[in-house]
Every structure is written in C-alpha cells, then in structure tokens.
Image 1 (tube, one colour):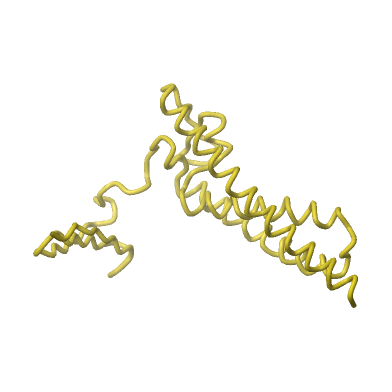
Image 2 (cartoon, rainbow, N blue to C red):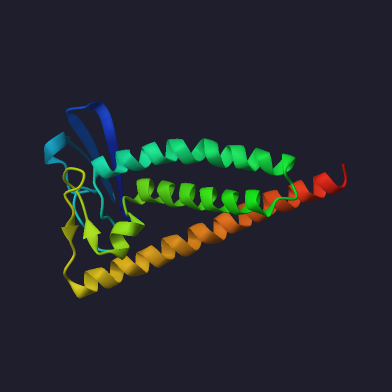
Length: 172
C-alpha cells in the first residue's frame, strides 16, 4: 500500500496562482488556487513551529546579508591570525548568528520571539503576545532546540577552522 504525498509548487504559473498537487494512491489531483485562497501553509501562528510572517523574514534576510560576509572574512582571517582566540570567538559568534538567522528564515520561527512568547504576522513592530501556557512551553522548547543545534554546529565549525589554521600556521 502506497502512502500519500503532497507537493506544493509556489509560483508555478504566475504570481497570481499557486498549484497544489495531491498524490493519493492511484489518483493525482491538481488544484489551482488564487494566491489568497491557498490552503494554510505558514501565514499564521503555530506554537513551536511558526511565529513570524513574511515581513519579519525579509528583515532576517538583511541580517543574513550582513553576517555572511563577516563570517567569510573571519574564516579567512583565521588563517592570517591563527594564534588569536579573539578571531575564534568572533567567528563562533558570527557563525552562530548566521545559522540562527538561516533557521529562522527556513522555519519562520524567531528564537527571540519564541523566548518572549511573541509572534508577528502583520506589519513590523505589531507584536502579539502568546497567552496559552502550552503554546509558550512549545515555543520555548523550540528555542532551546534551535539554540543548542546552532551552537553545536557553530562551535564545531569555528573550532575546526581555528585548529586547521593553527596547524597550518605552526607548520608553515
């Protein structure tokens, strides 16, 4: 018995229509919706899953454009200043920030909003408070998951770059 698979193509035809393909057993249903009539995806608060809208995501993209070159510069700079722990520390911080921002864009979940029990799907600055204790608990759990995963990856990356740079610096 085959399971069902659902696929969503954004912008398959134009900015005005979206295509939703539902493959279930023997049938394939292709549905075309106007953009505003799309089935719910990520445009409202879901505890522990989604707490920011498109305008908040666009702000995070601006920060990604800042932290990406900073992280690249510090990664390359580690090979010039291989004995500096400050370069390692700043590389760790910028890598952590970059990873968190990328996760926030990908999942539409802001760790700061999750920690302070907030969400925003309207205009920038129009924050709404989460009042349900179960929702707050799910948000905080997600905050810890993202934070710990990003820190582990950033720590591994920054330490690997630093150790490689130190090894090459000592043996050069």
